[in-house]
Length: 151
Image (cartoon, rainbow, N blue to C red; front, side):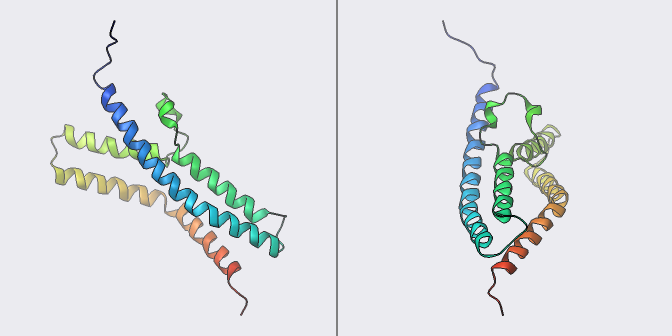
């Protein structure tokens, strides 16, 4: 007896496979940066006295955890779309871009109008993340100053 699937499940599956590949790439980039950042933070914590032993290291580790949660590698296993914990997870961004493409397609939009709509959505996303990005930049500058040799 063969099981029949709703027609859209094939495309949902293909989407999940493609999104997983993007997330794997992002995860590798995350790990590529997390290794030297945590090692550098640990080294600074060993050499420079801070508010608590390992304080910088644990902050870097917390940043790594939040970044990993935002990537959400295994979220395809969560069937609940409401399970997205934050507006800036990879799933939330992809869902937002997909909705823009679908909306433009349903309006009979051309490739140019879809590109414009996607650019607008990305600009809005950049505007919403401007303050957190500034905090990350400021934290990075602080770490660079602490790593710089004394003059």
